[in-house]
Amino acid sequence: MSRNGRARRTPDCTAAGPRPRARSRHERRRADSAEQAFVIGVLTSAADFERAGAWRLSDAPDYDSYLRDTAELLAEARRGFDTVRARMFHPQDFEEFCLLHGLDPAEPGARDRYLVNPPLQTQLLAYQGEDLAGDFVPRLVRARENGLTLRHADLLLDGGLYEERGRSVREAYQRGAEVFRRMLVGAGGGVYELRLAVDAPGGRLTATARVLQWEDGVVRINDEDLELVCAVLCAGLTRELPALAVLHGTRGSAAADEPRGGAADRGFRRTAWAWASGGQDWAPTAAAVRLDGVAAEPGYSLGTVR
Image (cartoon, rainbow, N blue to C red; front, side):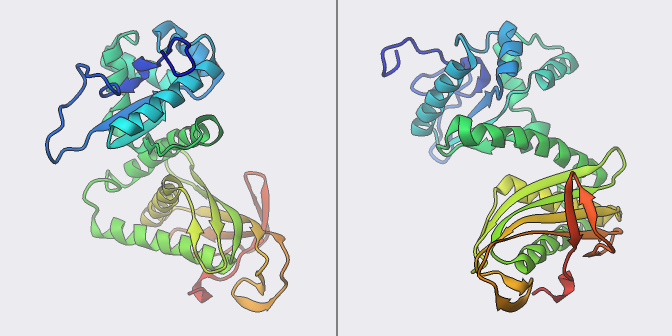
């Protein structure tokens, strides 16, 4: 029973690893130096909840109840395990996974295999007590999208993104991170969103990252968004692919007339800058552009930003 007296409707079939407070056949006994991890798949919409009903993932009567039960399970897991991680339980992905491996989707073992499938590990997020519906569920959706893009980027790099990186991939990854850093330093304090698109074989690689930057240079960005941006930049630079980036948002109160200095206007301003790459270097676009509906003016020279 739960604390409010109603029967507990635990979405057990979407969890891999031991249940909190109960040992199951999936549990690995703790060694002195071993870490216990709990992994759970979360349905992220009412439509997905309805679609997954035939697999008996939960006996909750509706999606809101399912979210409440899942939040309780995550809270218990945090008290009982060293690491709690989650990923989006995507019904279509699960069906395709079962078809590929000859599994019965109604069997709990199939769900466990799906959750810990190595190619999908990039979709896992550490759960640290965030509000499930308001913050964490949207991040799970983005993590799945990011994970698919990371797999595409890794294929373009012949598996070099996660295996032992060759020198060229390591250097391109570092160059990509430096490009992103200079975009942010030049922008100054504010709240921004970076949109990145690389024209790649097999389809366009895209990345989106939301950034909060203080005037002293401290940056807040989700780790998974930072990883995605750097990986997409790395793939574009390594394969010398054409790319476009737009940084847009609101500059903070200590913003300057120019990105790198000048008299402070002490106001908030909507801004949008654009850069393009032919493969090796990034430079301001030659004219105003539009990316995913966002119009932007040519950006500042990244070479003058330190």
